[in-house]
Amino acid sequence: MSDYTHVLAAIDFSSCAERVLSKAHEIAQRNNARLSLLHVVEYLPPIDTAYEPIMSSSWVIDENEMIKQAKKSLLQLSQKQPYGHTELHTLPGTPKYEISDFVKANQCDLVVMGSHGRHGMRLLLGSTANAVLHDMPCDILAVKITS
Image 1 (cartoon, rainbow, N blue to C red):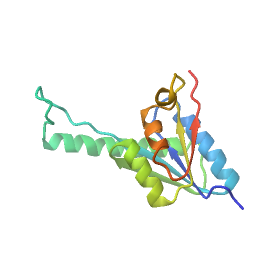
Image 2 (cartoon, rainbow, N blue to C red):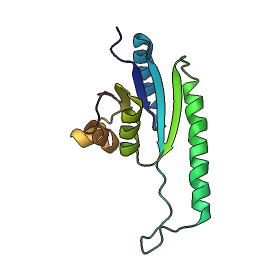
Image 3 (cartoon, rainbow, N blue to C red):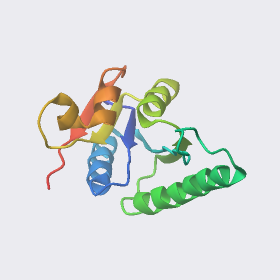
């Protein structure tokens, strides 16, 4: 019997993305589990001097372009380590909320994400990993990122 049936790799396209994918791929393969790669596009619209979002059709186009580019990058990353049960997901929003919602909606039982090697829990894991840690109904593997 497998320990994990659905592994989620939270990909942020930082320098550690390949290491996170490699670890998630290894665990999914060992457990014959589904592997989902998720990237959350966090778009912050331009703000004017009064700290109000500048609403225009151009920022909607920019967000759509960012999502399109993220999907392309996620596909390229996934092709570096092909695995038969891989699903790619790109969502707009705030990473800590979207990752948590995705895990709950898709019954993931392991989240693999990068950590940061500084001091303290928030700095150790990074703000997104730290936020996700406290709202997760499953195991989390924080892959140590070395400089």
